[in-house]
Image (cartoon, rainbow, N blue to C red; front, side):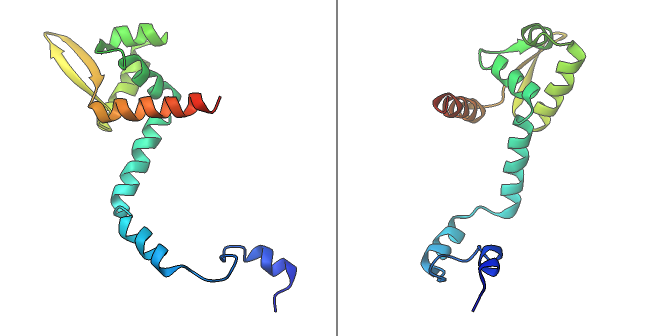
Length: 126
């Protein structure tokens, strides 16, 4: 028989003390591979930086060069360039060259969808 302190410490057991094997098997069968989950975590960590998410927000209006992004965000070109490099490596933004000018845009519609849905989620909670 457990005393009250042991119950609190061991609070990870289901209330009835029974694991629902079918539910566990179903959940395990739908779990993505560990490597994919780590990559997804890294993706969200990259977006978790306020400067990078502001950069994505600026690019949601369309393609911009680094000077335009710096002006929108009221930041230095070098600081924006650093963040764009991180976003590019994470495949969140892509580039297009026009002569000597490089333009940045959202990499694909999935990034835009995630941004839009995340923003809607936050707005609903306010």
